[in-house]
Length: 416
Image (cartoon, rainbow, N blue to C red):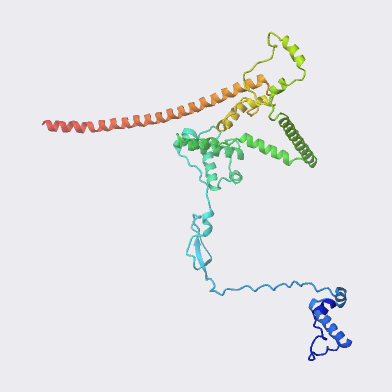
């Protein structure tokens, strides 16, 4: 710093006679006092002790991050809302009970605001004629059925509550909760079917799905009871076996992926005919060509099908099922006792051929079933129209028969 000061400071010898002499150096006492005062000011500013300040030396003090005080929220001064102690009624109640509560004076709705959340289940109701036509059962009386539907309507299909309020008839077998559910579903399905004899496909599918298997429900509950009654040792053993199964499946999937990757890399873009033509032992090929067999070896089949280059599975040549027919096809296959899949597990020549024939027969069966359903629907529609026409013709004949005496009397009067 002294060198830079000497270079930039003016030379006192080169100045004129008017130049002022340099100021005398300050005394040591005044400089020490100023330094101590500066240290005290810096110590107060930083909020540290003198020892820490001496350790810092000539290092400039760090920048202090001062937090701004939180701004005081601006409260808007407005007029307070007016509340009233007013009566109200709820449209969800049928007894017309009037209660009171505090409500905003600007609200003019007398109905209870939470009454819209009181939703009720629409339970079907049947007539005497409908019950006689398709709702009667030997193990269910009319009184039991009426009691069940009334409880379902009262408790919104909460079957645990319905079963708790159920009163068994002494002359009838005791009903459990599965019997109540099955009877309710059966009554609802039969009533809807009788009221809509010609449903569209969506309604027909909805009616077909309205099923309840009480035996399966009982089996499910029995399995749940077995699960809840397990000991801790059985739970740990099951968890260990499940972990081993997951590891085995993971290893199997990884092995299959690696095998497929190796096969695809080796045979990618290669024609199998190239391996047959490429042979360095030309002499052996010429000698073998002179002694060709007159007939084909037994068991070897010759096909004119164009094969895919590289290695492939025989099952990959099977025809695929349309996505629209996939679910129905798998359902029929499962009914026949075959694993629900579109490819055989062991894709040999004989198995693939028989599986292809089975697939063609199943698809043909589904097409015939579809045509039969369509014809049956058309037949029911035409039968319904015919019944309406016959009923209309009978009514017209009866009307003409009723009017015929009056017409005959008018004719006699005209003749007179």
